[in-house]
Length: 161
Image (cartoon, rainbow, N blue to C red; front, side, top):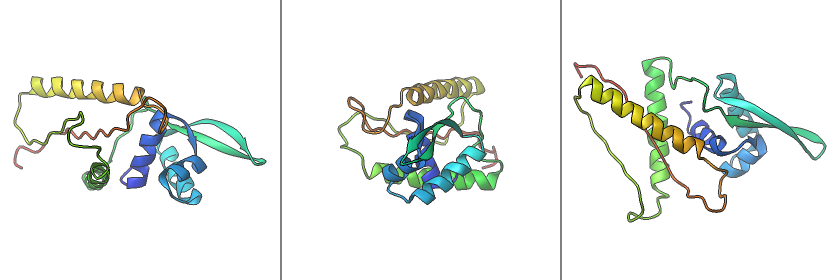
């Protein structure tokens, strides 16, 4: 997942199933590049097949992000660092397209010491909010929708850090 295109693909495929050609057009990349990254996401279980369609005499596979599939963002500290680096880059890209500072939104950055029960409660609330937004995701540019960004990273740190 530690690749900016894969993060963007997962976001797209949360709201609707898409083919490699549709993903390529939406992200302004080549069809081959979209196909490669979709295959990688499928191989690790982050995408599921969502049917096929006929396209000019051929078959195009459609994929969607499986919200209910348990998946780790990284298998070790090195991979986690790469994932967070990709997420940070994606956040910077999205921030450059922010509407205006007067629109609704929230952001926070903190390194805190909290009680375990407060930590558990906060994680539960964030997971609930994230899942609600993911389940409410719609196809790109659908009438009546807002283009929004959500980035979360909650994790426990070493006490010695």
